[in-house]
Structures are given as structure tokens and as C-alpha cells.
Length: 172
Image 1 (cartoon, rainbow, N blue to C red):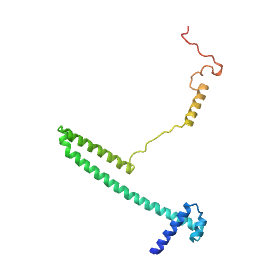
Image 2: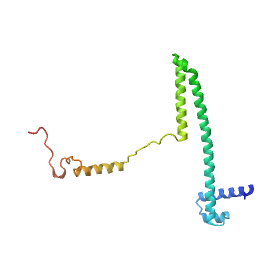
Image 3: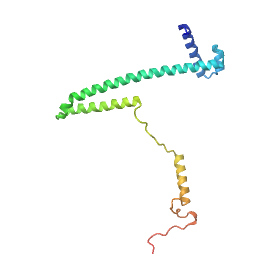
Image 4: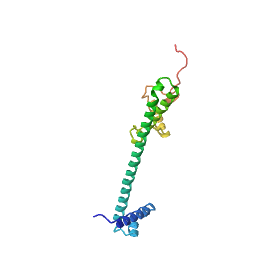
């Protein structure tokens, strides 16, 4: 059974108050008591439903915006392609002004396509590697341990483990 407009308005108002109370730090029990919910659980459920509805509505708004942006990008791309095509023959024929217009149109097309790809999430994510001082210290300690143990086949530095420094100059 569909709720009347008055019931829908009352529910929306109560949900709004419940969400504001939750944001302000009220417990579900306090919200239930203040707003006339049957139980703590029903207050929790109502707030969750309100948030889910908001997420769905926000998602629809974002999709509408995305579609409008895509239409704008596509119109921009079409316009720049027409511009490029209109000056193409003159640019190929040596007209430097026409060549500049074709080049600017080409750059505008590339930028619009790149923006469109970004909006659609087509671009592959970039992999970033962040090295911290702690990570570097761990690597240094590991390498020092390997060097000290001779694991790399490199003799320990002079003065370590009671070894004398190597003699300098030619031997023999």
C-alpha cells in the first residue's frame, strides 16, 4: 500500500530529524524516544533507509550530470572536427593560418577526448610507489645484514669483524 503524500512528508521530516540527531551524536535509543519510533532498531532501520535513498538519489543525479557532460564533450568534439575539416585542405596546401587552426582544433579534440575518458573512468589507474623513511631504513638494515653475513659474496668493510684493511697499490 502506497503512503499518502502527507505520510510521505511526515516520514521524510522525521528521517531528516533522526539523521540530524545522529550526526549530533545521539544514540539510536535517544532518537527512538525523541521521535516516537517503536524501538531503537526501528530508528536505526529508518535512518539506514534514508541514507540508502539519499545514496540512490545522489547516484541518479551524478549519472544525469555525467550524461550531460558526455553530450557536451561529444558536441565539442564534433565542432572541432568540423573546424579541422574545413581548414584541412588549406593547411595541407601551405596556408600557415589554416595550419594553426587545424593544430588548435586537433589539440582541442585531444583534450575533450581525454576529459571524456576521465569522466567515464576509461583510463587505467596509475600505479604509484611511495617510499617512506621507515621502508628505506628496513631495506638498509636488510642489506647491511646480508653484507655482514657475506650473503652477497662481498667482503665486509675494513675494520669489521677484526679484518685488516686491504693493502693499496699493486701487489707483487
